[in-house]
Image 1 (spheres, helix red, strand yellow):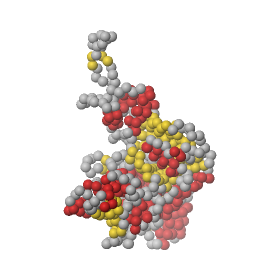
Image 2 (cartoon, helix red, strand yellow):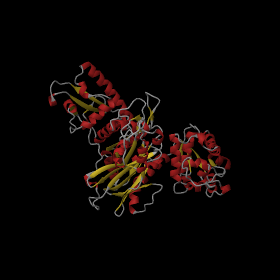
Image 3 (cartoon, one colour):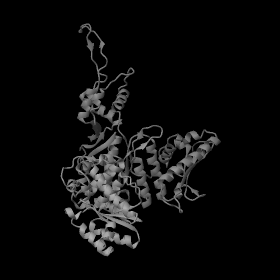
Image 4 (spheres, one colour):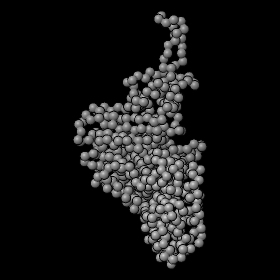
Length: 615
């Protein structure tokens, strides 16, 4: 079961967010915008939906206190969800039913008609209620089965008559009761607004035993226990030899796991050892046993967390939070409010790496089943947490005085205000950063016309299983190719150029560009130029390497046209290519689903690359 979209009304700066759909291609959605745009308000509203209480100061200042507030979440039923079983278990528990083995209380076929459902948390007149959409409520109501018929003659009935009674009586005024049943089976929302509950230098066992949650570092220590599947309280009763053996094993596990996610170098290496030390004492409270915690970045120098850098301990504590939630095994919706704060650029990239890992579906070792990745929504204005290859994740958060907070996709944004430039800034920065990164020349370089070509060729390199080492470089237009060629020649690097603009069928710039390269690089030698520059035969626009059926694998609603460039459209050219790339990476688009003509077109291009790179 996955969160499909949400809608927020009358919450702080949000008058009506409209339906905000989460990323379709993966489990990560990014709220991007400047400070005070309303990113945090969106996350807090979703957290209030989970908690069942609205923050007291969440009513917009411009509205009366009696204003109705609401947060609605629509969930999609996945193929692997056994909704009939989930609902049946909840009904049995909530209504204290006692059933015989094999007894069914819900109609399986009717419940199967529920493909998605919407729950709304509504606050009005200091009361909060949960509502289920009418269509789903009516399906559930009709799906309740009748108990087996039992003869029950009375004075008013003839012998043999039966009384028909349903397992539970669902009246029209029970919407909230049924809504709670559905909500109990939804993914849990977990909100991290700040990660200041840092791993402490020390914690007394008495604080853990008595569940003193206000103790500094309490939650971080509980997270550590969860990750290690251990219990510090029970260690107090273990013999010293057993406790020390487990302590060594658990410290090794913890350090190895953390180093897999921490990529920064300290003292020339990224080896960071995180460990605890259990101190056994006979006594109570502060005279009793306690646990010390250490972080070692240089061999032989373990220091308490407070003596390490704020960035390192911040990352460690956030890591403990995320890993602990992930270890629970439940479907989660993780809300992160600016996880980049206090972190160096490199550490921000480590956080992004960890987020991607948590959101990825993985195989479960103990069985053939898969563990679905967590859905993650995070707010940021850092370009380092936005990947140019995954702009489908990004929602622009824009705040204007008249309309309040609004949410738009990049490709479909209709908002045109001075605030939009601010909202786009982190995306612009991310694109600039990423373009610089993948435009940096390598030993072997395939220079392409633009970013769309970069996505399509990167995807087909995977689809065609081409394993040669070369880097695709987008030239951002055919006119910019010369600069990249000059750099490659200057640094004595291998290079080839591919242009999708055949002049024999209407291409405008390719012949001029070919002639420039021939004259300025190869002194007019066409044979040498042909070995370095390939104008794709019969292609004007990289989209025309595909058929309409190929493009429908990305968007089934594209309009039919003989020109695939027009089918995709100029406005979403790059995003469409990026979506194709994402679907190839996820395995949704495979070689066997594509037309033979597109495979042939790209195969010819890659054959040219293979020949050219061996020269």
